[in-house]
Length: 319
Ligand SMILES: C[S@@+](CC[C@H](N)C(=O)[O-])C[C@H]1O[C@@H](n2cnc3c(N)ncnc32)[C@H](O)[C@@H]1O
Image (cartoon, rainbow, N blue to C red; front, side, top):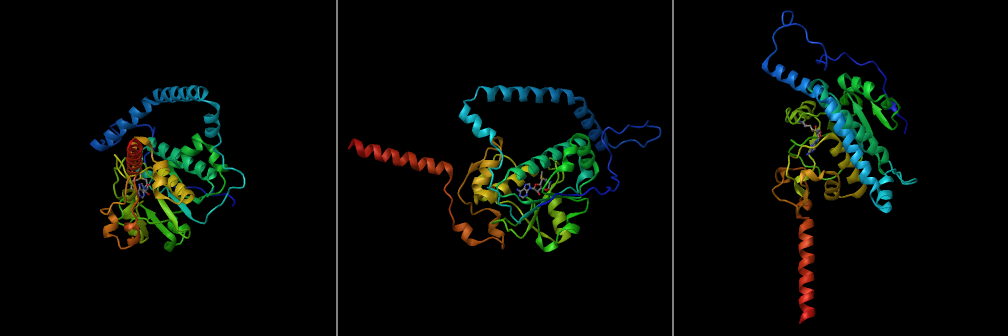
């Protein structure tokens, strides 16, 4: 598969750019309370840049030291993150990162999104079942920032980068918007579909925006089946790269539970659970009843059973 990186000129972004000089209050109308707050936040973030850089350096140093102190076997297993030769089974499933929310984000969030996209790209290149990856509505702050910080994206392979909206790039009937607000719960992944992920880092300030957009464009939508397989101590709204990596892991392992447990970070307090009948599947005509009947024994449940069996066996021995 060849890279289809579009180098078409981008339309002008009307969004305010970070770091743009502020004009005197005489020539410019007074800022609203919200705009002032946004500006202050941005300034604070800019001021703390060096501090963050220093912290990153420290963490890097710590990781290096940790690696040096690790036994060799453990180290080897971590280093070889490359896709083993001959293991490549590309699939026809498409995943689109919809970058049409650019003007809703502050530059710091655009930078976070850039990192998340880089991570998606790298993980797809490593995956044994890579998907057909698309970036659509690519432009504005995101493109500017990528040009500034990582020109390497222009050499990316096996990815389609388009300045057009996904609805102009892919057929409507193959599109499924992934959104945590959808009442539909994904059962499995369909190789003939293009799953769209909202390219947005918004700390949930724009709650439900992708769901509304999906309805507006009249395309299918669904949420990941998180509640059916795991319990989390945080919101079920995930970052772009986590959703993408879950898709890759599901394609490789064939299990949602395994995919969620391996990809979601520890800090989210992920615990595997049995299939919860109160999940949105209850009201969902698209869900399959066989799914509900399928009981998944939780990790803790399994451990508890093993302990009980052990106890019973040891009692028998004593008798
Ligand atoms: C940080 S979230 C953006 C949240 C945003 N407020 C919205 O309305 O989508 C990034 C994207 O990941 C996808 N996503 C996050 N959590 C999801 C979930 N539980 N199920 C399906 N998609 C999810 C969605 O496509 C979402 O737009």
